[in-house]
Length: 311
Image 1 (tube, rainbow, N blue to C red):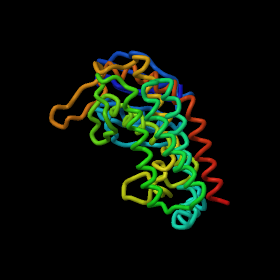
Image 2: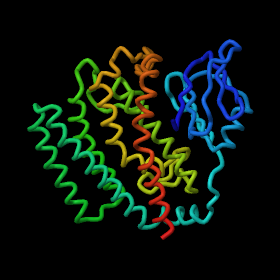
Image 3: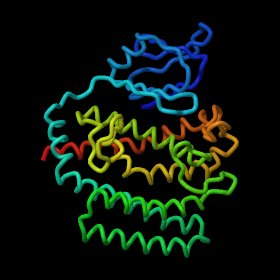
Image 4: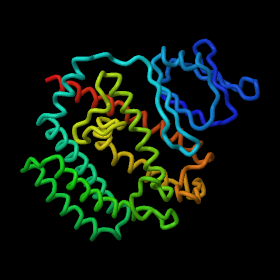
């Protein structure tokens, strides 16, 4: 178990030797050994003291904070790699041709992943065959263009947006009408599927931020996503490669009826839809099982990028 989700407002977290101890109303409710942990995700109002934070930081365990409505608040990491030379090379290459090369590769791989999932949609929903054939034809033309040309980063953003629009127009049709998922809506998500997509994208974003920091790169200096104050642009870059994996995961959650519309709550003031408490309890184990299969890929991708930056 690499991750533990803490999502009970009556819980207090303490350190007991080499374990995390859970207390409720002054009584110990259980514990988890620190040894296998890489990250602790705290949702909502959970009590903890500084000794708990110190212990996790010393053991290289990250602490990620979300509100009770699953809005990201912040992250605390353990010791990070102080590879100054790697960061200097990263800064240099972020303003050179290297950024355009990396960007083209990222978007080409993302579009290829989208194409593969679009092809699979024929089996999932055969009624979409005509639309799928047209989409594949458009995607193939785009991939050929990317192979034969060297578009600017601005042009790549236009290409990515165009293909994503086609992709999501089909992806939406895989879900039952009861979920009211008609298009990709980010801020705020207005239906259960968008709520899950946003939440999982956010979770893997900060998992990749952690990998970036541990290897010694600067998560704020990206290549496809240029510098923007307060944004981990490099993590945004790398997440692009795994968005289709998230889309598949979210589809399987609803397909297998692990979650339904009943597990979601709507904020009437903002129209935001978010996963309720009972649904989160189901989701955490599903996410951890899926993420355990993905984390080695995320780590290897960060390591590969670091090597290329140093070349």
